[in-house]
Image 1 (spheres, helix red, strand yellow):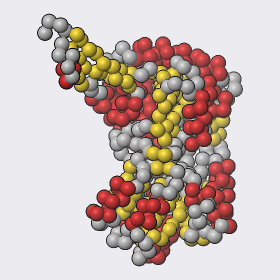
Image 2 (cartoon, rainbow, N blue to C red):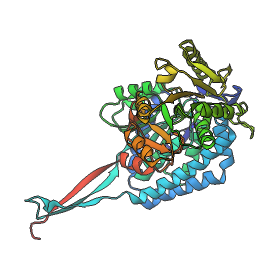
Image 3 (cartoon, rainbow, N blue to C red):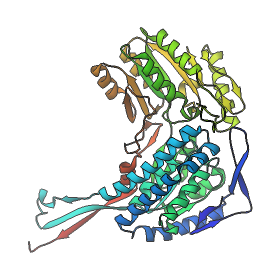
Image 4 (cartoon, helix red, strand yellow):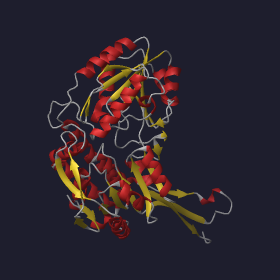
Length: 473
């Protein structure tokens, strides 16, 4: 596929292979962007902003509505690309493609609810002759940097609100999964997006990342990815708005009064969706000691039924990790934990990029797989005696994106909801539940700001005050 620069689909002599992580087969190639391409993209985006900000709210919404309809009509091909270039099974990919249509639709709807307010200037002496208000205006050129694990919907989460607000966008999709993003760009242009309103540049972050992030013509960076990459962006970005979603190490508390079978089903799905490569996936489960053994037995039994392998087969529950190097990393973390005293209850074996769904217990706090974001198909089980202990241990890591608690006790649920140090608490749901319109983001090392269409619109606009001095009123 070609990338989108200065209103044209462009190819380059130097290419990047896009390969299926299951069998390493070649799917397609994309251009390997350069610093010169970055300059073309930014210059075009600056011109594009002058066009985008003059579109009416109605026009912006119609573009997004039409793009959603185009994707909806071709859902099967979008799902196939998601599954082929990434780690998701075809069933998981269909759900992502469908969510993308909702994301664009809600972004279109929210564009019509970007309200201002009148300001009571007479609320302080001296303001009696003044009248005014504020409204929100688009911030300018937005740089969107997206990850591999949701290669279509997380791109829509950045492009949708940016377009709805009247910004121009430069999109840098994940190097290993650029095809879904390029196909989304095709849909937006077909829907009537001005060609200069969107630039899509593919390439290696190490070669074009700094040139993009540090340019002063870019007014906001919206980044989803790892902590170290986030730190690098923050170091070079200069004075511009930054929104970051940097991942997590999500805890779940299972209280003694739960229905074990349904809780297990939710937590197993939350741990192994997309081979565990999910920033809100279940990683640590703190289980009341009275039901620990029963929960553990049921959890292992349910995990053992998972079918792993070819993503394109309907019966497959879990596909490969994004590449063999990532699978080797998870294998190393599991072996380190075992050497420190952890016990593998199920799984723990690797074949190429496939890593078995893995359940651990007795994981020491100094183990990497306890402290860091594993971003792989492993989950740790821990017994706890009190709610206070569960909350303290849940909050003990440096991340704080989502947490969850399963209980029938409203008092227990409310105490946990208000004391868990994170951006969202799911009650009687896995940590990986997300409605695309809810505020999404975390605290501590989980990031800065909030996504979710309404909230992204606020991040991607600025308030401007208009004040009239009217001496004759």
